[in-house]
Image (cartoon, rainbow, N blue to C red; front, side, top):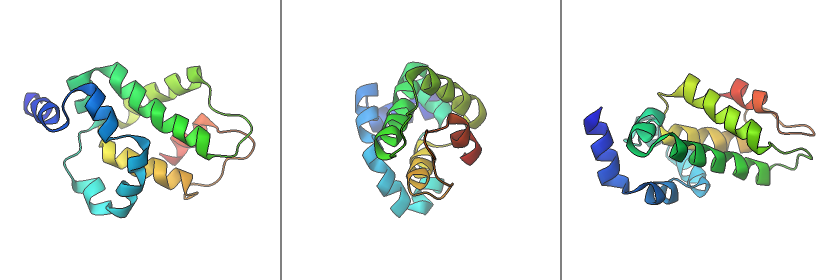
Length: 130
């Protein structure tokens, strides 16, 4: 585990640089490079927490969720407390996923591959899609 942490910090730098490198705009790149998204060297959620702390992972996932909020035309958006709870669930259930896999997931979610949001963005629909 220490090797993965050291490699992550060496490759992506500090937490601010990590967040910039994996911002929501990178979702489209993940969709164009499926093999890399699944088999590449992007860190897992666990590695991010061990390298940068849980707060950084929370900020990163919340940025993806806020991007979803902005993208979808739903009348009721995900609120901050819901986002925070959703982050906890995602980390608890999917700690082994790579950052690139989640970028791909959010791209596909926005592309409608897991259905549509009607009236509100439902956090449970997101967890079911995952």
